[in-house]
Image (cartoon, rainbow, N blue to C red):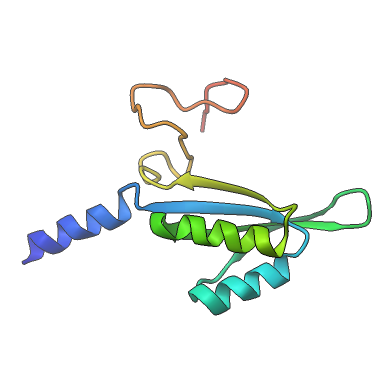
Length: 120
């Protein structure tokens, strides 16, 4: 029975079932409340900045399951049409110490968006 639980835990936590959704929006409080009410998920506010035109842009993050991605994306765009949504698979984050890879080939090196090798 323990082996079945271990396999199930690995499938859920180390698979492509989970995603990390990052949302940049000027309506962070409203979107956070809607997600909390409809999905029961807590939204983490990572950063808040001024866009130069008097609006405050907040960056939100939450972990979702693959099957919730479309519904959450539709909900966010319905609330704020100008929101920027980025969804990234979370598999393999333990080995990479929190750095995401946008590809599944483990033989390729982790690089920044500019192509530089990541170093600790």
